[in-house]
Length: 220
Image (cartoon, rainbow, N blue to C red):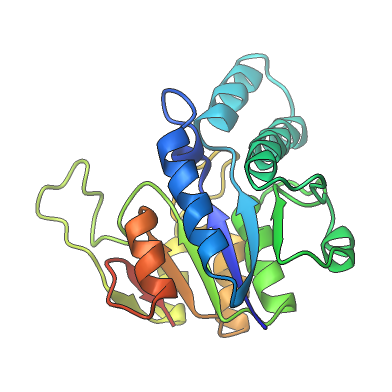
């Protein structure tokens, strides 16, 4: 059975409030596709950034700030696990390896700083030889520029690992950063040639799982 790893952005899980409409549809899609094993890694999103902003005002260390971010990813993971009736949320790679269920939900693994849950998801995709690593976020994919500030920005449907990595490594890592994939995750998918797909929303996820055309960015 093939494995699909999904990095589920915290910005989708919690907006102004918990996005139950999205989560219920997400659950329906995942449960429908019994031909795959799914490992879902949750991000911290707005909740993490709120805590991180407060921690910076209190002048906490970067390690302490990163750990707060890690805890918020696990908070979101417990919510998603409850939705899927999963009683166990692993916190290490070894714990994931010990779970035999077809659906596994986790947040950030371990306590390392200077990475996001994307790094953990990419590492899991490598370890499990995943068919796809899907990053679900709040934008339709990678753009030529920030679409919020540049109205002429266009979606990039395909980019090589090398070109994507060159682009993202120009950005300095910062706990709570809000980009479609972190720097270490980019290195992992490039080094291991992992097909990675950036999408927004359940419609595109279902299209991918049904082998239909979808809107997003393929990194390959």
